[in-house]
Image (cartoon, rainbow, N blue to C red):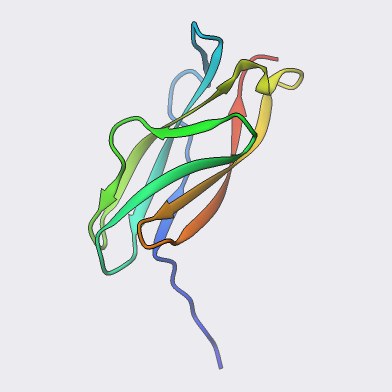
Length: 117
């Protein structure tokens, strides 16, 4: 017997084109990503984003919280900010992004934050 599972949403995390990171005047590091979301469920869903690792990093949608109808796909800009010291020494740090929908489904995704050495 084969059991197939279908995720309620798909997501990919390509980096936004342009400069890889920005250091804001507040000494905050900013990385820009584009999240490609696809609603695979049979209902309208809202999506939330949260950085689990590294500590101190915060994710926020640059526009509005995404809401997708069944079958809809969208490319949503996501801004990740954190203390400029996150990347000290190597110029990058691995992170974990948690994406969730309004039905409580979650997906963990790897991303790499870039910044000054």
